[in-house]
Figure 1 (tube, rainbow, N blue to C red):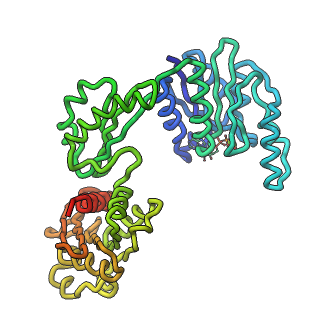
Figure 2: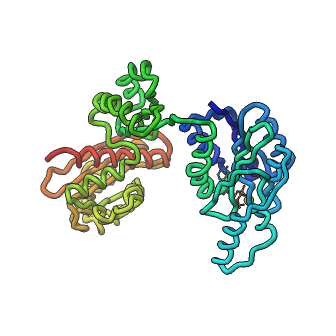
Figure 3: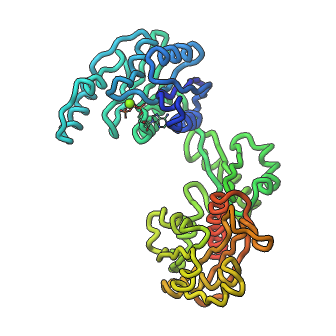
Length: 417
Ligand code: ATP
Ligand code: MG
């Protein structure tokens, strides 16, 4: 199994001005494909230090993968450093030059000498085309057969280059047949420790596929990872274990892989031909933002009212002022009235409301910070409300309330009538 070290190039990374997301992405894709990542580094835009880091890494493992510093400007020095470390010169790569000329021509801009420099690649390199940008990536080789693969910094250029060009190249070069295939089982409203308890024996006994639990705010994923030679083989290995896990977590699994709570809620609404309207107080439109983040949301999501002030609850949602006066704006009665009001005003099948105290101020002994009421009002059904006391600061309370809301909606909408 080949092993590599990763180097993220860029002074911004060392100043804390740029978060290095490239390294995590590259590491995950390489690991999935059977390439061991031994160490990761961040180095500033300094030719000597980059060269030194490459040399040191090559002394320890089979190759180095870098991102960043391939652009046309004076602080883009990765290619030069790779040449220094490997002791090779550069040569013009004509197809890359032609690709760059075509891009500049299509923008009607003149190509500068420093752009031309980007088509000069280490002698004997394997080129990694860059259809999303100008600078190509490349894999350069040392006399000992070790490699330095360099890719551009912008993630939208680097990711497809890695997945479509570099990974296939390395798989072939090192004759790698197996890959890690992952199935993610998404749960909601079940604590990490409860999940752990329910699948503990699988945890301890499963080697391939292997399982892991990943907790998010108010929900958790179970990952099933199989090392297999093909997607079909992986599916055969994963399917029985997945069924077992889903059985043990029955009632809490809302979907797999790309499914999100919001996409699942919209799918359920769509399948029933229902529409929804939201009345949000303490969540400030975040549930609506989650739903509208899903393509095709307009099929089922009509709209919402951010009813923050009581006057808005009363004027736009027809909440009776007597309810607010008697029970307060954060109450079961107010939540129910908001849900009904928004459903009636927007003419939807379902109305859903949140009202709570996000904090840090505004709490009382009766109604502490973190208390949130949720209500669901559906045409022709008994309205329902739920109360939950969230812990955390203001943004945590809001984020958790959104997940809880989507969990409640999922739970209610999936039930047969
Ligand atoms: P360009 O031609 O755009 O200059 P480049 O290969 O020279 O590409 P850099 O100059 O190092 O790349 O970085 C360009 C941009 O790419 C950065 O400003 C940043 O937005 C993004 N980027 C670079 N490295 C990383 C990284 N490790 N993680 C996330 N984003 C990164
Ligand atoms: Mg640059």
